[in-house]
Image 1 (cartoon, rainbow, N blue to C red):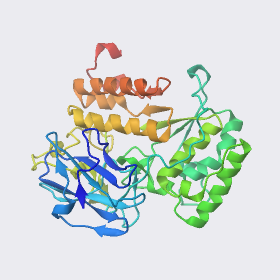
Image 2 (tube, helix red, strand yellow; image 1 turned 60 degrees about the vertical axis):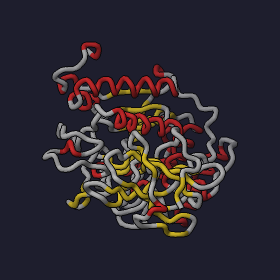
Image 3 (tube, rainbow, N blue to C red; image 1 turned 90 degrees about the vertical axis):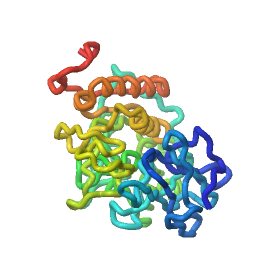
Image 4 (cartoon, rainbow, N blue to C red; image 1 turned 135 degrees about the vertical axis):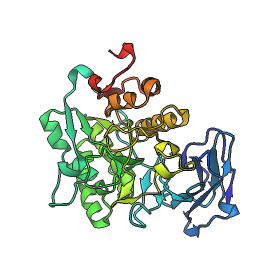
Length: 383
């Protein structure tokens, strides 16, 4: 079932469809004794800790495999054998499924290249000419009390934003959080859009499609089909796309100083990144692969930025937003906390992150929230 076909040292993280069919899978679990891919591939359930679903481990602790039957929209997750073995969500999942109540849900395989973009002519506005509008997706365009508004609701407000003169939209964090409603600063699945912001009802989706296509038609652009916006992953792309069509840049608010909660209804979420690949209990939170025991009251633990693989996870997240969602920049939450909880590693991580992204997209907007009073000792060059 699983093979090393289409696998190379450059195989991307997570689940990725390949041109000739099937999908590669790659995850980081250096302490694990075994990692299995389980899911429903091409309509056939493949589950269990069995040899034909076992991924191969390299010298750096990365596990890879290829499943020829895997298709767009298939469900999957990893079973990680270690001190705390069990099912884990893919930290790089593009979207989480609703096949089971969160946090015990699967991940979706999503095609990175399926959405038909319309924004090739868009140019990020100059810094001297920016009018920034900040919005919380879930509360910005509510039409029914107690029900969060969605990415597609925001699309309907684009003419209003244009009339205001806004040319930069900065939504609060949009990735999946453990508890809803939320402002978004307790993210747990950094690559997946948050559930309440996604439309799943096909009838309702058709209504939004009419709004989207009217906006595209007004600009002389080709319409979308229902399949183009059927997933939450695609709906977020459509939001950025339509903003660009109407001259509005999009800046994502990202939280790299911490993550978590990691509990749902006061029950630990042992499917999450915090429990992905642990060591035996050492008496504090340093037994997590991705995190340290440092917490500044930010709602979760600091990422272990001394570890280059953890740094790369965050850099990969930002690259993902640029490459797959065409974002124009980032507002980095509480970088002062990131530095204070990580000593020299925090500052050098910021340098690695920003220089990498500037190389990828020279016009990228980068704005760091920084409070010097929260940092006892930080490099003189930052003062």
